[in-house]
Image (cartoon, rainbow, N blue to C red; front, side, top):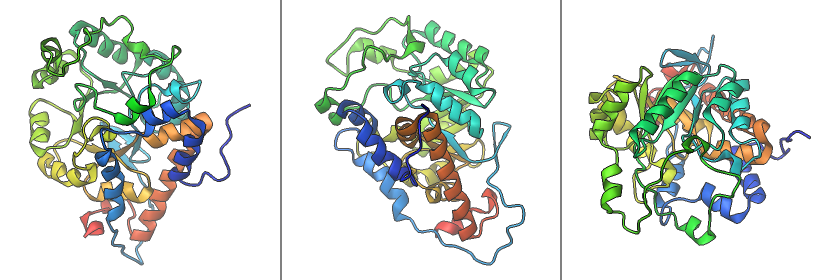
Length: 356
C-alpha cells in the first residue's frame, strides 16, 4: 500500500509533528537535535519569524511566476532539496523516495556524501532532474577524487563542497539518546575508505593533518569541470576567499545548527554574504526555513535560492515520496500566495523594500 498523506498535514510544522510521532527516540534525536544547547538551531527558525514583510498592493500580476536560473538551468522555483544523510533511517526506500519526489516536481536535489543509497542508483531514479553531489573532502584524496568521478559519470551537474563540519559537532541530544546507525544503514558511497584511527582528542595530530584547507578547494577545482559551490559560509571574509579560490556559488549555512552552538543564524548573516559576493556568483541559503514567507524573505535579502533540509525528512518519514512532494508543494504554494499578497510578480521584484 502506498504511503498516504495525512489529512491534517497542511504545513511543514504538521509534518514535523507527525514525523516525531513515527520515529524512535534515537532517530528523532539525530534528526531534530542540534549542537550543545541548540541555540543556533533555535535561532535559525526564530530569526525568520521575527522579520516583518512590508507589502505593496494593487499591483499588476500578469505573467506572475517563481522562475529562476541557477548554473544555467531554468527552474520553476527557487526551492531546492538540501543534502541530508541516511534517508533509510526514515523510510525503507531512503534517498530513492526523495529522488522520486524531486523528479516528479522538477526540484533539484543535492545528494549527500553520506547517502544510504548509491549515488548512481539515486541518479537513475531522478530521471534527468538536476542532481548536485554534496562532497566532504576525505583524508584519502584518491578516494575523494573517485567520488567526484562517479558523480560526473552518473550525470550530477555540480559539486557542493561542505566546509563547516571538518569534525563532528557535540550533539548532546544524540549522546543522551545513545544514537548509532543500525546495521542496515550505512554511508554506502564511502565503502572502501579506510577510516582514521579513533581518538579522544580533537587536536590529535593525525586528525589535524587530514582537515581540508583553501588549497583543497583549489585542488578540487583542478580535478573537475563541474561547477563547485561551497556550503557552510557564514563570514563575509570567507565568502570573498571562496570566490578568490574559484567557487561557482556560495551556500550560507551553519549546518542546521548541528556543528557549533552560538553561531549566527543564517538569516542574520545572509545580507552580509550577499554584500561581500556582490553578484559575482549565486548565493543560496538554508537553515530554519519553514514557510513560503521565509523563502520570500531570503530572496528579498539577496539569495538566489533556498534549501530545505529537515522538512524534507519530515515528509519522507511521514509519507515517503508522496510526503516529500507534498512538503515541496506546500512551500511552493505559500511562496506564491506570499508574492501575491506583497505585490511581487516575480522573484526580481522581491527586493529589500519588503523587509524594511
